[in-house]
Image (cartoon, rainbow, N blue to C red; front, side):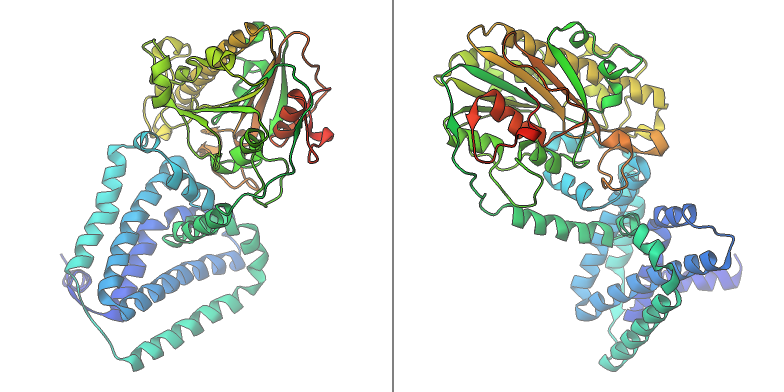
Length: 517
């Protein structure tokens, strides 16, 4: 090995560092290890043949290095122990974030980070892979060991002020020099911020908890409602998970993913658009009376307070605060289910008809919140007998499978959804005393490898159509209601349509958002 290279390596891997030099090294490692997706996006969105864009790329590399090194320098200067702890945490979390960015091509924005915090153990374990472990070891644990063993020599306050002043001046000069590229930054801000480690998930975490704090405030009660008659009526609202419209044969898909619903009478389907691409936001949209940001009372809470029987059955998460008596999870439903397939969403049907018949109230809302099409392990979300389309992808790293196998596994989840909805309808058909309807709407769509994107969570402003074009399916019992000639629907149509079907009068009812005649 040449002596010059040996000296460079010896200096890099020494364990005694001045604070400024160590912060610069950490900034360089952070740039080298975790910013390939960031600069990959930049290269794909500039013309790297002209001088202005080449200058932009050089400025961005410099800015990422300088900003990260400066922040690391501030942390280490304030406290070497706390600074080293945060650096270790950043490198490990960066490794995890990089794995998901590279594997699923997500952007670490508030939507994705928020989904992490509400993910159940079962959903999280589905993402486990040895590749993830290697990412954590190579990009997280090894740098963490080196950081732990390093001794940092703290400089003087005079040196600290000098370095801080020069850094701020450097950043200011970079901003001024690239002032003419501000429109480009404005256009691509969400992607850039979502790929800059570790600030993508750090900033998004603060935003998530800030919004959660605001949303956790006491709900604003809606005006009291009145039940107009004593006729028995039941609405079963089924909230789908990650079901994209284009893979339903009801909407013209080439593969027969709806063999049962396609033969069902009194069934209608409409194109719909989701309000977002992640569950927490879209479930709220389904249950809200308008699209304001104010925390108004949600549909189940509102109806329950106004003397309607409300039942919530779920195998999912990401639901808003519910103030109802009958909230039933997979575990609580197992007592009603005698079959062997308790681990799948068929458990949501257990004792449904009997529960409706046992109600002492004439107006009933049942919400069924499924988890069927949630990735990445689509092939594990349905019983083996529903594996109609083969071969299927069994790898949680979807990019490692041929796209056809990913789509086959996903399509089988739609076939299973078809079976679930069909059986709900069959139960409702036996309730002769009730006017009944089943309304199915998905929370959002799903990417299955189009443009090398998987799953969901991309900001709605830049999301591909696969992530927001959703199904909206309605079944009606004989003699109950007729439907308007609806065109494109939204999730906000649910609230007012349920009020209409149950004959509930309310000052906040909006006839324009009702799907029934």
